Image 1 (cartoon, rainbow, N blue to C red):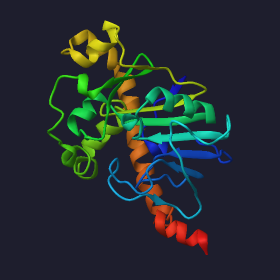
Image 2 (image 1 turned 90 degrees about the vertical axis):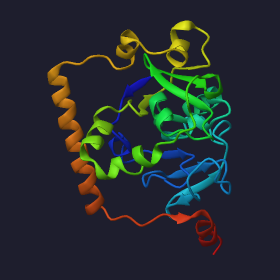
Image 3 (image 1 turned 120 degrees about the horizontal axis):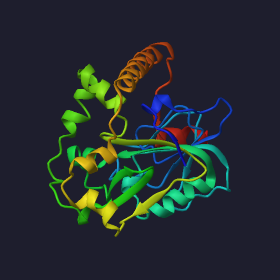
Image 4 (image 1 turned 180 degrees about the vertical axis):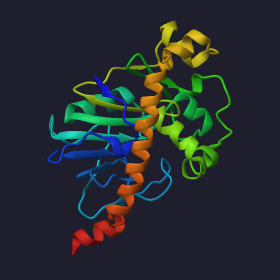
Amino acid sequence: MITRHPLGRQDLRIKRRDKVLEIGPGHDPMFRSDVIADKFPHDDTHRCGKVLIYPHQQFIEADGEQLPFEKDAFDYVICNQVLEHADNPARFIEEMVRVGKRGYVETPSMLGELMFPKESHRWVILLIEDKLVFYEKEKMPGNYRNNYGEVFLNYLPYQSLPFKMLYVSEPNLLLNRIEWEGTIEYLVNPEDDYYSSFFTRKWNREMTMKIFPPRRGLTEINRTLQASYYLVREKLGQKIHKRPSPITLDEYLAEREK
């Protein structure tokens, strides 16, 4: 089940002694991960650069839909910007919850996919009533060719504090961010009109409020304060905790062979 919606990857509730698996981090692994699993170690089609890894981590070449680990082998599983690429997201999720007890999932939301689409993304994903709902992009109306990622991914998050506040205080606006424990509810290509209408029709007020429920003023103030605290903590953490830079997979493998 979904336990919370983190403000970002620096807001995850990973315990000190947790054994952490990260699936498909590509060029952007988390330092806290103990084991890195990647299906395409030498094919950059689905990512923005070469696979990187920190020296303390263990690398396993593995398919997220068929993980070579025992049940509950990990306390925490991270899957960041991967499920939208999956051939079989249902199988991928079942494998995650099989090998992990808890974890974090992040994907583009439907609005995010419209703003910065990728040809390698097969699925458009919405969080509806605590379910991850996958809908094949090929079945959707709309323009998924114009890519504004340079603005919404590479400029505004680094140059505009108001945008970054929005990005953090509305965790499911451009991205779906969830922490889960035990299981994850999901639907793939739902035929039920209630779910499919979010992907195939113009949203009315009722549909919009279903995805983004109205909130009280005090809740808004609290979210703004939480977002401010998160951004300050993130910036200070980057300055205080100086970590080694990740290395390429080739460098990592060469070191292991010595």
